[in-house]
Image (cartoon, rainbow, N blue to C red; front, side, top):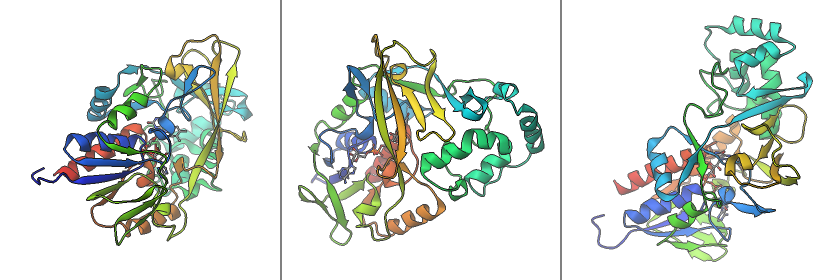
Length: 374
Ligand SMILES: Cc1cc2nc3c(=O)[nH]c(=O)nc-3n(C[C@H](O)[C@H](O)[C@H](O)COP(=O)(O)OP(=O)(O)OC[C@H]3O[C@@H](n4cnc5c(N)ncnc54)[C@H](O)[C@@H]3O)c2cc1C
């Protein structure tokens, strides 16, 4: 920076996005203030303990092909590389299958002949880009779609129809809807989790060193004219403001609330060393069950104990965990974008209202810092 006065940056939220921003901007010589509602940084990726077992709010594995992101993560904490599998339980078939869908499982399915002829009909045809449902039907056919995708997706997002969803999700497995070889979840990229028992906590704590971190500070709204942020601890501003929170509350719900799917996490200790098979870390429940997923934390954290901790994820309408990327909600978000004042950036999972994983939001932070510093 050529300017003699240090430029100030105000960051709203101390999840992975906010902490990565704080870390990088501080290194570039900015004066950084971070406002966070909770007592501690990290959001749902923070590690807590139950019955001696470390856990996060649902599984939070680190997986990416992005070398710059891996390097940044590894500069703050040591990551243990590991691979695992995930399964889906299909009640109609009374069977567990690999998920993502695995070609070698199809011959075990009671309706295998129908499935194979549906796949044959679709061979060499362009996938539909109309919506989420049309995409999946066009690549895997109705039998596999209703087995694995339809009900799971509806309960995951709390929606009536998968036609409401656009197809621009990272996880719409474009080009490879059925795995042929590797049954590992992310076998084709780096997958890992911190060595430390407290997971990513050191990342958050290290990243915020040298910044002004204001905890238990609830951000209420931003006045776009004055660029002042109203919070439970008074008003704040900065030469640059970076938001990682949901933009609806930030702009006083001017265009209505954005829709999110929340998660209630039920933790259960079971009196057995291990409950899922060796290499299976979680199971999706793809039918009428009220929950989406059951995870065994030991498989991720490598915690050693005579008992085991599982978590069950039950979708709700309260939390802001998964932005519901229907066409209507994306349009609403674009209205909010028009309110953004000058020297204001909105990034991360909530700030961009886009389904993003940990590496994606770290990438957002890296790119934003490059723009600010150019
Ligand atoms: C159940 C679940 C499982 C997941 N599993 C994975 C996984 O395995 N791998 C992966 O890569 N990604 C996973 N993700 C996604 C990943 O956790 C997110 O990409 C990442 O946490 C987003 O970071 P963020 O900083 O953008 O947002 P957040 O982590 O949501 O951080 C926002 C921060 O802002 C704070 N905040 C919110 N409102 C206010 C307010 N009004 N005032 C002040 N502070 C506020 C919050 O307390 C939080 O600390 C998962 C997400 C969920 C919900």
